[in-house]
Image (cartoon, rainbow, N blue to C red):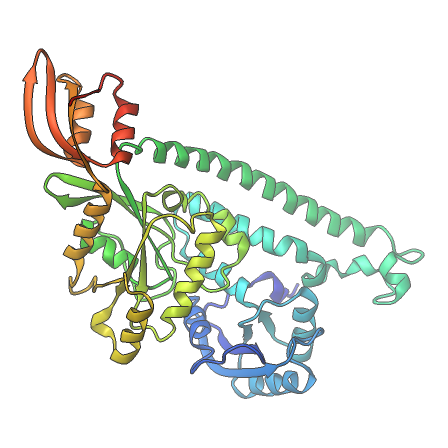
Length: 438
């Protein structure tokens, strides 16, 4: 029995023709298919050709319209393309129509990203998250995408009678699609339950670190977050010049000097038009960023679309509900910048950003200083009396306060310190018997 191409959405080792439809009021850019090219190559496809069309509106039936669809078919023949990849999200009926016209498998942007995530998932948690995202994306499309379910229309095909199930046609088709949907719904429920348990564990893990300052690396995929993580903490994270090289969160202790440290986390990269289901299913992985004290937003300053990438990351952070969290913008890869004028424009638009290179080490000390300053906050000078045997409270003061003098009287440590209000409030939460001096 021949395998339905819709049942294998992978593009590994296949020749891919890339297509993008740009609405007339949207900017074109110098290379509108640059990112999709990187995505396709990251998925293992061999990009053989490109088609770009500007339209006032997407064609309801095929997204591109009749003339452009014929051009796509001809180019697919000439380039011997096995798969056609759209940089747009397509409806099931659009995919069906394009596949019928071109006799080739058609994948849209969301399916391609899901395929990349599936190939990158290594841990049990990541595999569960990707499977959930794939099921939630494909389950509503069962009727329009899987040809073995076309019996739902019965022998009458696409006629009005067939759609509602004419005489003698009801039963098998309806049973098949209901079985498939029920199986998908059951699996989705099971995955959500498992991920909810993981999410609860993550929340508990994060809460155990409340007495420690936490920073989280966020940013567009391939911005250099993992390389920066390694440079700051010697974490040994695997790095690669490809999209979505890292899916799992890694947390390491980061030495800030003077006996102080923070916990630094690396997270999955974001991308423009990241599928909503993927953001939702990876919420447990992003728990570190959600609960971090500071977000370090890493930007590839050498990328000509750096501004658009910043905006895309900000949209995802907003979707996660952390748009207002304190952040620090880091323009990475400045050693690879070719257009100095573009970098100057970027810096003028984001005057608080730091220029760094995780590869060469430029600006890394400046990051440490800035994070240390923010960790200590706007400090106030005061005298505190702490039980001498309370090692946890004294250790907290060592990390989050500047201690000028220390004396011991009647079993208590009397300290002259400068401490931020936030740190002082947390000190009181972990040690009840704290007294303030004059």
